[in-house]
Amino acid sequence: MKRIVIICEGETEQEFCDKTLTKHFQPLEIFLHAPRIKHSNGGIVRWDRLKKQIETTLREDRKAYVTLLIDYYGLYEKYQFPGWTEAQTIVNKNERMSFLETQMQLDIDENLRYRFIPYIQLHEFEGLLFCNVDVFRQVIPQDELVGMQELVEVVSENPNPEMINNSPETSPSHRLLRIIKGYNKIVYGNIIAETIGIETIRAKCPRFNEWLTQIENIIE
Image 1: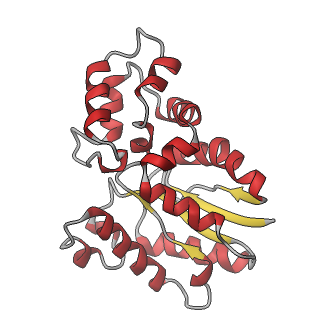
Image 2: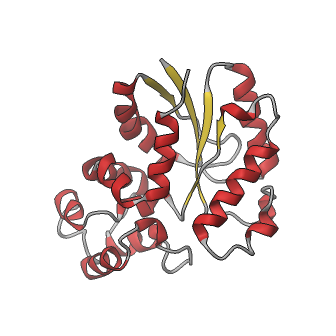
């Protein structure tokens, strides 16, 4: 059985890993452990701190692979991720993420980096939830689904939900706060994701699909 450690940015990502990804990987004999970033209070930290957690985990469990589930939204220069300044000159966001992920991997100890799978979710984990309008109707009480028009528009305008952008007004999480009255990201996030199903999310979100494929293809 392969062991994968997914270091999560916050409770929402952790819940998704524990409840949804674990079920997906179990038949593939992949054991999942999903701790949160240490000393973060549910958010991102400077790269040097995250790097220390990654390398410590890799050293303590020499058979495990380590990956990340962190959002590009909320990452700023102050967090000092490797290659950050150069990355900002790359207009294509998918290419920008790939560049940042490569720089992260190269900054990990060369004896450990082959077991590290860097991943940044573009733009937010919550973007994965905008795959199916009907799922919202199924799981959200009608009196709480107050932004149906915006939901329909954003799904129709973004066939790839990962491209829903990262401004404070239009980021996926801020949209959900308007769409669902009393939105609780930890509770609703996992319920919506689980109801949508991993295969539907993979079909609509290419970067997310590529990440899962990398994990599935790990050779012991």
